[in-house]
Length: 353
Image (cartoon, rainbow, N blue to C red; front, side):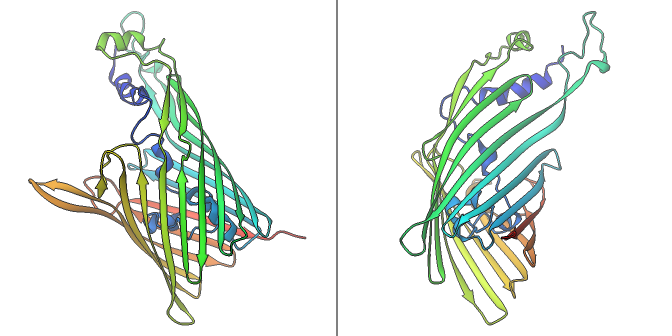
């Protein structure tokens, strides 16, 4: 019996065997919005539309319109994996905003060769079926201004659904807690993702491939709970007014994770710190040119330490209340990843009274 497809699943299914996993629910770290991706995710302080629900829900109170809608589609690994995002936010009062977000990261049309050989030992390609492996997340967001001028807070309630076709499924939930503070030309943001830890309960269907696992000496996975540890996203930004037509905004940030040692610039057994920086130059608040860099890491190259990083660039155009953004990412090292062209749309409107 062909086993190569099942062996792929052996690796992915066993990731959830332990309770606490490094890079758990990593699809939630892909990022949304071409503006953010072109600035290397340096938008935790400045995000102020429906996309803020993902980066920092407290920033939702800074949206300019009563209603805001954002959408994005991106593809990775030469189009094999697809990431889709849809978000909406609604200003219920001058000081309160609610939002909703849907995310999907998936690989579709995967051939299932478990039944390729019939009962007589003959290969029958008509027996090949196709399936999808996809991760979903649903956010409900709430943001409110406090009595302290410039300070707001926000929370996300998250529901996770991970579907590995007939092989396994997981259901999870968690919360984010965030702050946003504006003072003069400065703005600060903090988002404590998975602040209470996020729990995924995995359920496995091993009947279809139990014999294959036993024949290949692989451990048969059992139902378990996977825990995603908290992560703190920080950002500080400032607007520089060059003249009446040109502005320059810059933001620096850091992602601090607590789930073990990672391949980041600063890392220990207790935590890992991943710094990044982004720039956005604008002309009449109409055309935007963006750049950023992040994913700093020290790697060994022929027994010598070498600094590695990942730059990104992008463009944006705002026509009335419609913003169209483009980002070119993964341009630092083509031996690791392919170029990713990302487009996103954001539209705000006030409705009718």
